[in-house]
Length: 187
Image 1 (cartoon, rainbow, N blue to C red):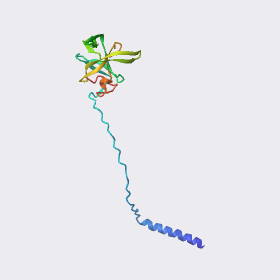
Image 2: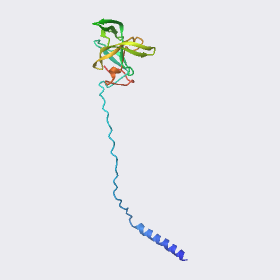
Image 3: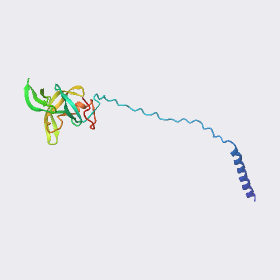
Image 4: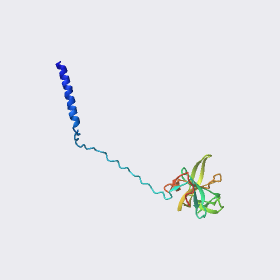
C-alpha cells in the first residue's frame, strides 16, 4: 500500500507542478553568440579578349577586291585557314627574277572585270573531296566590313561553287564572330 500511495502522490505532485508552470510565461534561455565563419566568395577571373571590330557576321558576306567597285558574295568558312577567290585567265610569268601571276576577276553578279598582276606569295596544298590540290597564294587588298586588309588568297577555279569568294580564318580571326544563321550583315 505504501507503494501505491507513493505513486499516487508522485502523479498528483507532477500534475500540480505542470499546471502551475502552464500559467507562467516560459522564456527561452539566452544562447551565447556563435561566430559563423563564411568563406569569402572566390573572385572570378575575367578573361579579356580582343574586341571584334566587325561584331557578329553571317555565313555569306560581301567582300570588295580593290580597286573593283562592286562586292563579291563570299562564303565565310571558319574551317578554311586561307581565303580563296575564283580567277580566270591565270598565267605565270617572271618579273625581275621572281615568279608572278596574272589573272582576271570577273564579278558574276554584274560582269565587272579587273585584271591583276601579283607576285606569288607561296604555294599551298589544299585538301579537297577529289584529293589534294596545289594552289598559288597571292596578297590581295580587300575591303571587308569597312576595313581595308592585305590578306592572302589562294587562286582557284570556283566555277562549280555558288560563291566566288571564300573568307577564311586569316581574315575573320580577331575581327568577327560568325553566326551561320544570318547573312549579309556587312556593307
